[in-house]
Amino acid sequence: MSELHTSNTTGNPAPLGLMGFGMTTVLLNLHNAGFIPLDSMILAMGIFYGGIAQVIAGIMEWKRGNTFACTAFTSFGMFWLSLVGFIWLPKTSLAIAGPGKEIATPAYMIMWGIFTFVLFIATLKLNRALQVVFFTLAVLFFLLAIGDASGNEVIAKAAGWEGMVCGFSAIYAGLAEVLNEVYGRTVWPTGPVAKG
Image (cartoon, rainbow, N blue to C red; front, side):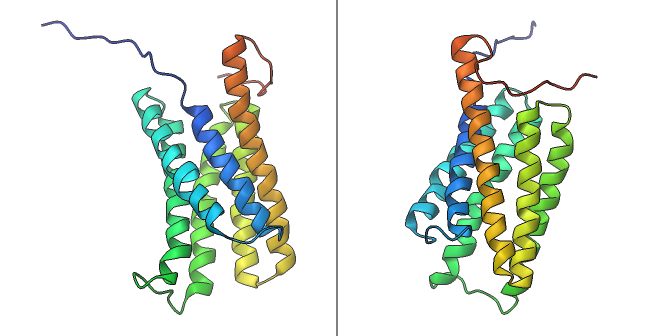
C-alpha cells in the first residue's frame, strides 16, 4: 500500500502570531510605562489577539512542521491568556490572590524570562528580526520581575519602554513577512539567516 503524500498549501501563520504578540505587547507596555490604565481594552487584546490568535498560529505552525514557531506562538498565546486570568480571577469570586502575590508575580515573570531566553538562543539560527524580538522579550520579563520584586517604579516604567521596543520589533517582523511575501522580494529586511 502506497503512502499518501500531500503538499502544504497553507498560508504562513507567522505574521498572525507576530502581530498578535506585538500589538498586545505594545498596548500592555503603554500601561507599564504609565501612559494608559490597565483596562478592558488591554485585557480583551490579551484574550483574543495576543492569546487565541497566537494559539491558532501555533497550531498552524505545528501543521507545517515548524517546532520552534509552534512552541513559541502556542506558549505565548497561553502566556497572554494566563496573564489575563492572573489579573482578572482575583477580582471575581472564582479565585483569590494568595498572600504570596509579591513572590508569585516575580516568579511568574522569571519563569517566562528563562523560557524566552532559551528560545532566543534558538533564534541565533534564524533571522536578525526574530533575534531582536526574543532578546528584548527576555530582557522585558527580567525587568518586570525585578520591578515587581523591588517595588521600584523607575524599573517598572523602564520595563514599559523596553516592552514597547519589543512589541514594535515583533510588529515589524510580522509585517515584513507579509510585505516580502506579497511583493516576492525583500521590501522590509529581516536580516541574514545564520548558516550551518
